[in-house]
Length: 131
Image (cartoon, rainbow, N blue to C red):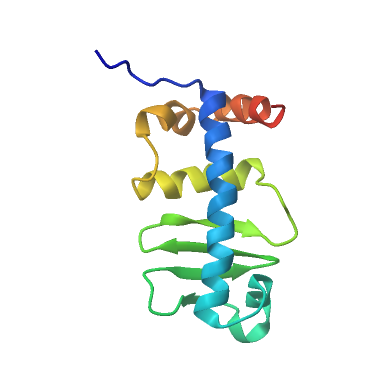
């Protein structure tokens, strides 16, 4: 008999943080390749600013301040990050969770409570940061 994989809310956020880092690396490569620029942060130059499609892909980007938000139509997949921050903050990580859930990239049962209860999200996020 196969057992069901269960994880705590803190473990779910730790998994999410790991996915955030790998998705950020992927997004930086996509930006460079799609726009033919050397550094992903070059997207912040005036000629690239705004909300635009990334090459021939299904991805769109929107620049903001010192960051970029990448997603498919319907806020699916992708990531929102600032180039001057190495780690995800509470808000950006929660938005990342929503994008990934919308795209079917996360197991919903592991994140449902975190999505529905902001206090539980904050507590679990703080606990995950300490590990």
